[in-house]
Image (cartoon, rainbow, N blue to C red; front, side):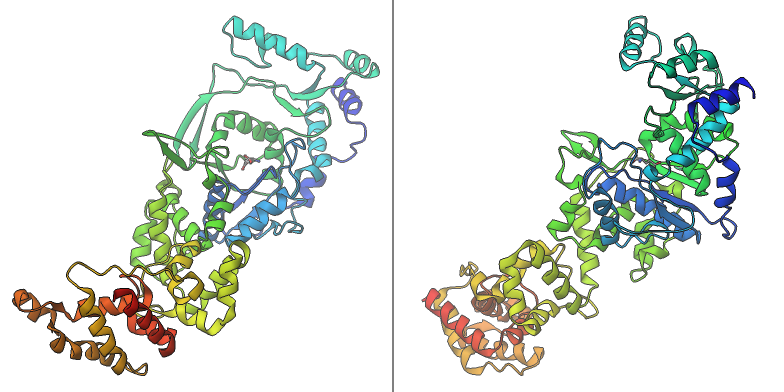
Amino acid sequence: MTNNEKMAELLLPSIDKKPEYYEALYPERNLKEGAKVTRVAPSPTGYLHIGTLFTSLVNRIAATSSDGIFFTRIEDTDKKREVEGGIENIIDGLGRFNIAIDEGFISGKEEKGNYGPYQQSKRAEIYQTYVKELIRQGYAYPCFCTAEELEKVRELQEKDNIRTGYHGKWAVHRDITFEEAKANIDKGMPFVIRLKSPGNEENKVVFEDMIKGKIEMPENDEDFVLLKSDGIPTYHFAHAIDDHLMHTTHVMRGDEWISSVPKHIQLFRILGFKVPKFAHVSPIMKLENGAKRKISKRKDPEAAVHFFIEEGYDALSVVEYLMTIAASDFEDFRRANPDKPYTEFKFNLKKMSVSGALFDQNKLIDVSKNVVSKMSGETVSQKIIAWAKEYDGGFYDLLIKDLDFTKAVFSIDRDCAKPRKDISKWKDAKDYVSYFFEPLFNPDYNLPENLNSSDAVAFLKAYKEIYDETDTKEEWFNKIKGLCDALGFAAETKVYKANPELYKGHAGDLSTVLRIAVTGRRNTPDLCSIMQVMGKDKCMERIDKAISAFA
Ligand code: GLU
């Protein structure tokens, strides 16, 4: 046995497999040429973050556009930061946004696929097998430095303006012998396993980031930790092993990892793995006092995706909005293909923002109005009921009293060639339709300036006599027109505009009076439809109420 082999046995005695075992267990994927294998690798440390949803979407769409695979992997090596239910929060959260997952964790509880386990805490033996091989080859060694010793080194380095870290002469255990290591272990000293970096700071590594372009950085010369003292890998090492064995072709992740790429490329090379393509996704930014900053978990409610769900944005609205951030040519696609699903969009990473796109709530609202306008009345009412059930019990009770009525309410001006783009989120729906529900009815009986209350009362009284709920829209409006003459109003707007001094107003003004009477507001969807949905009795009751208010 060589000294390196003896060291490997000393440090990881229970590992009896060789890397070849795993190489055979996880063979190449059988995919067509050019298919991208992508993944999202969240740590289960809280709620689904908007950035994670965004990165997942980008990974998903890159896989879909190339007939590839998108998988999830749970990076739970930092048990201190893990929260109860963290996996569910994130994976089920992705499900809520209909981000289809081909492999890995497909729900909070289930994983599927031939390249698992897809949870790093269950892969300790795999990582240790590869580390053991690196020790045998002389590429890794044990380090017995305590946290205090490392801290002292750091202070010294900072004082002398030297790059901090375990490199060069500061890498004190780099040449540790088998005998020294054995003596320390016999004393019960804990140790980590570090890479024996062959890199030199003077050399450059160059790589092509698929979003950011060509990047050049100094080679890594730091003997960074591969395995922590509990045998659990660091992110860097786990990333190299997992993305190799799971055959990820494109590592698309947050750009906070860019500075670590030299470490990663070095690891892939030493391990004899093919280096994947990298695409570093810029974070979503927010404008604060004129300056751009990353959306922050601490400061911004919209950092947690849950915020959008509570507000009642439809999942598709959020996704469509994120697509406009993800790809500068998505809006052109949307205009050219108003009815195609976003998943048919051909995604080009080069079209992604290099510096980080701004989150724009108004844009989200616009996108969402468009998305909701394409839904049927049936769908909208179901979605609003589901939302209210969770977030507004009082509204929910009103909505489920008469499901046909609720559906009819949300079908007005929908399911037609030019649907109204009015609702952006379910939370606003309550105010939007409040006049249909007696307990929410809160009328504003103020008439426009050109109308006086006695004309309004005279009109409403006359109108009551002729209303017929079976009238078509045209007949309905003709009846209003028919009352104009007697009240001193012009039946046609054109006629009124030609000689405004001759009239008190026109038929449109009288329909405003009727709108105010029936709904308590000046702006609503089609009034004839509203009255039909409300039913004649309710309309007459409302008109009577308005007459007393005007009188
Ligand atoms: N667990 C890492 C993170 O949450 C994943 C980075 C990656 O995608 O490789 O930042």
